[in-house]
Length: 87
Image 1 (cartoon, rainbow, N blue to C red):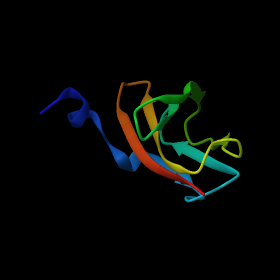
Image 2: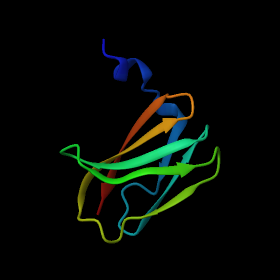
Image 3: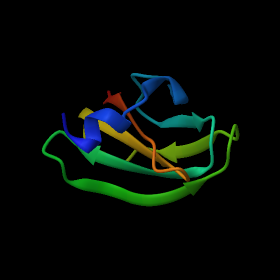
């Protein structure tokens, strides 16, 4: 098993509304950074800092419709991944 798969913990990351077309709120139960990644693995937005339990607002109004992923890396290097659908 890869290091990535052993560090993924989805319950620590919340995204809403999903699907969305204007913005999403991202919240995690730890401090860390998030990235927006397209279906091909390209980083659209990288290394945005976020605070524990404080929702970060991400404007997606200029992003083409499709499926993306929010990758959250906690200060303890725990990785959470959630699918985001942009309408």
